[in-house]
Image (cartoon, rainbow, N blue to C red; front, side, top):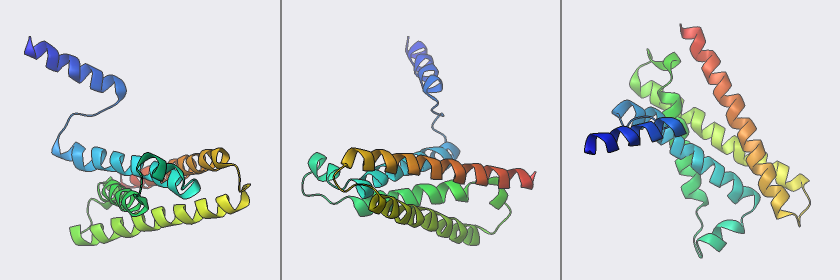
Length: 152
């Protein structure tokens, strides 16, 4: 019976696209996934800062979202095949630099987009932030995957 439940849980995980909990998957999938969720929350927080205090009163989570996005992005970059032959400390610096530039560049892009939008339309700002963030993530991951292909 327990074996059936575990098998069912694995099937459900596979259907929603989750990977098994292994050391490699935690560092190269789940931590970056958490960073991606934080990146999305950061985009909403930058574009529509009134939302987070309504959900979590008296809490400014901007830095938490930013740090989580940087950490998740850094783990994603660190684990990429094109950096596999680089010394770990140097690889870590590259990953941290790339993740920081990615996240802070996104914050700057969202601020510029927000300044171009009507001031009284928070829904438009939220959608624009999430949309711009999705485009930035797609282009960045496509780029990194293309660089990984050069390694082969």
